[in-house]
Image 1 (cartoon, rainbow, N blue to C red):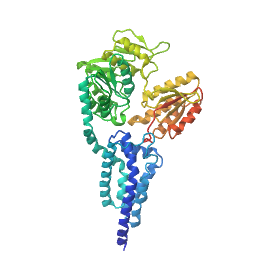
Image 2 (cartoon, rainbow, N blue to C red):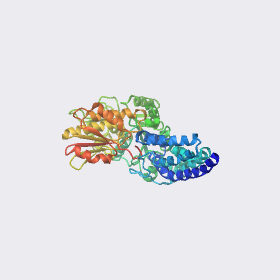
Image 3 (cartoon, rainbow, N blue to C red):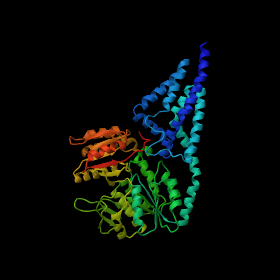
Length: 532
């Protein structure tokens, strides 16, 4: 009798679970495919983000635990009525993680051809796994399949990666052909940060002497550079300035194979890629490959590791142009930042007399020095370089100063996301607030992709904000705990306090009120809404 009852209930529960799973899969697919798109389709990134949401978003972790218990009970305890437990678990899975929108607000899912192909593989994988698990586990099978959706999305990305690369090869081949036809001098720039600003500076310095094309925005991967060449390179172009980025080992070498540099430069070796590379030594090794094919190399030798690379490249017969931001250094370009009453100066060429420049407030000094070294290496006359340094272009959302309603000054540094740059932006904002005689307000979600040092660096940034007595609005949950703990560790009685806010938009009105007419608001970094 009990066996007959179990059999009678089993099939309806399996059918119900399968139908519910098919419906729940729609928002689940939209969520994880959107995350994959925002994370540049890198296998492993979706599971990493899913784990971040479970740890940071209240309720998501406990709800996932409830789902796990429901699945386990349905599998382990052979009671017919308990076979219904996976049904509410599937409904719950359709909502998890709480707060992660399947539509998206900061940047909605773009249904491109690549996304459509990924969705086909996503569906096939989920169907295959779902059928197997349902045959093995009954109604718990569809629930477990959806619970594994993030790693299954990463598996789909891994399957599609070589297919997408092969399909896009024709665009890269066309770009290589265009480069061979136009034959510009190729300038390649990489670094943990500062690539985009340095690229813009280089284009500005070169354009007075040469017909110059630079890769736009942050088009710094294989397809981005191919598109830049195919769309922008025309006969007569003398210089092509390429920013080169990476998401995994081997990518810089691959970019240099497709777009061989004549002049290669590294801005800085930092912690910006620790999430994937894990150590700064691995980052240095990867970034250094940009010099392998280049005849001329431009390196900032204030970093001992890059000084060693410069010596090695020189021994291998390359022309090496060294730059420094420390006065008195034996280098080809020495930029001495402003100090006290003395203004900034730059010496362009060994033995050259320093000439005054007004670049103290324009980006990181090392970026300016590297850009000047590249221009010197390319053959731009030193007087031309010096004259153009006073009008270096800014980069959008990088230390842009604007006027807020009510009179406060806003520093939009939302594209800055590294520890050194964030601290420098805070220092500049604090000095500006003191000069204006008003309060300083910092609105930030902290820094990401710093791997094992992320919590430590955000704690230090929060502490620095507290030390200058600013008001802190810690945005979202990704780094909230570290920022607030750091702030509390150094905030004095005169500090303006710290608050947690859901989004930058929620902080804007209060930040303007706190800043008043004479204050300064620093928007430091921003995170898209696929982060918690």
